[in-house]
Image 1 (cartoon, rainbow, N blue to C red):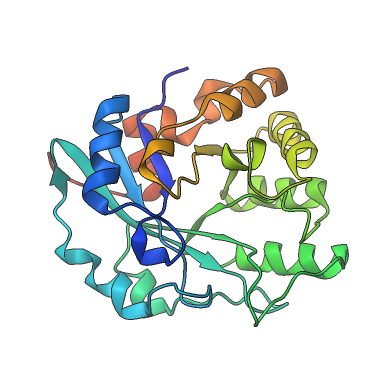
Image 2: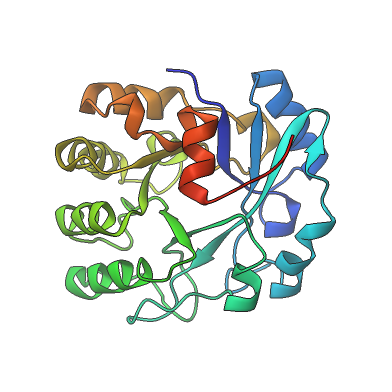
Length: 240
């Protein structure tokens, strides 16, 4: 399977990532990616930008070195009711928003599966949320079956996070593989993301693609495997 886009990429703006937009784009070009999504962390992560940064993404050109730039964000779940840390007026200006759990003061790590599950499912009710990121994070365990079924019902994609299968979120690899199998079982939509925090990892999908293959997720359910499918899913009408 060949992917045309990496939607989960961080820049130096996230505070704990190491590459600029230009450096990430250069790597995307090197990997043959046609589309590159900016998805820096929402404001509640230490060192992350304020909401003004996301409003100002309109200044980023649509194309850099021939690569289409999508303006996105990885927001944080900050309450048990599923509230996120990026206001609606910013979300309206973005091409897409992903959301996940991170260790923030507003919602620190919790082993309460029921509460975490309820919060994640509630976050999916936000009409601007398109993707749930790294749901296998062992610091925030959820009812994976319930989360994937909810994502299917609400038309939200579940991320198969390559970084979680390699080096991030220690102890979560098995969870991620289980989630991939549930995505296949229920016919949910999926996005394969690198979760790159340095340019060298942009477009690194090897482990996630293997997990998708083993799980049996069909290509037509992978949002970032086809441009038309991606644009339809995100509701985009970007002229070339």
